[in-house]
Length: 89
Image (cartoon, rainbow, N blue to C red; front, side):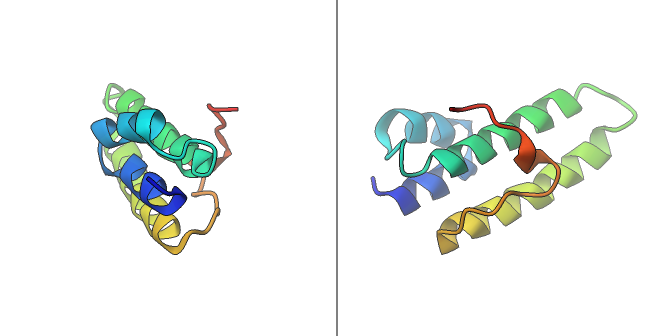
């Protein structure tokens, strides 16, 4: 898979994220793989906090849509708030 397709697949599901990590152009799409991983992890952790789970879910949904659009356009822009998290080096 090329850089663009790997970035797009990383945002689709957890399975897509794993496929992007294993079979995709990891070096070319590392930025989007990192963004998708951060969004999924923040959403997963936020789901267990009863008071803020709806706010976190909405934030993750907006960030997910923005990240997917950036991956389609092949832009490396950080999503708001969550984009600062660096999990992959």
